Image 1 (cartoon, rainbow, N blue to C red):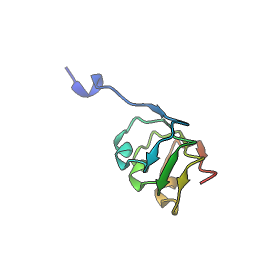
Image 2 (cartoon, one colour):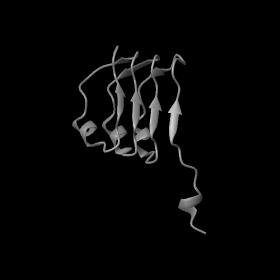
Image 3 (cartoon, rainbow, N blue to C red):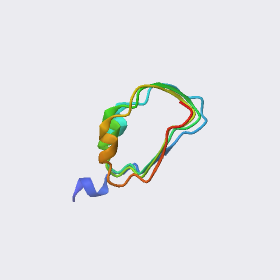
Image 4 (cartoon, rainbow, N blue to C red):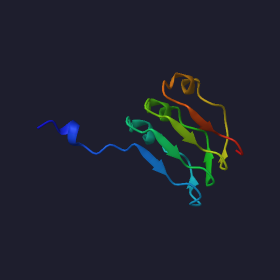
Length: 90
């Protein structure tokens, strides 16, 4: 039995408007099947971790309405499937 083919795959995370505080965990970048990340309208702060862009299946990234700061990592330009990106109101 091939364990990797039966392992659970996280393809989407949606925690919008949940009053989350803190930073975006860099570990999210290890979710190689992640297609949708929706963390808008929370109280997240700090910068967007460079490791997040290791999730090359990422299609939609919604981080608007937080307190994020800093510059965007150049690796954001290497995401081959990214179609939806909203970082407004940070």
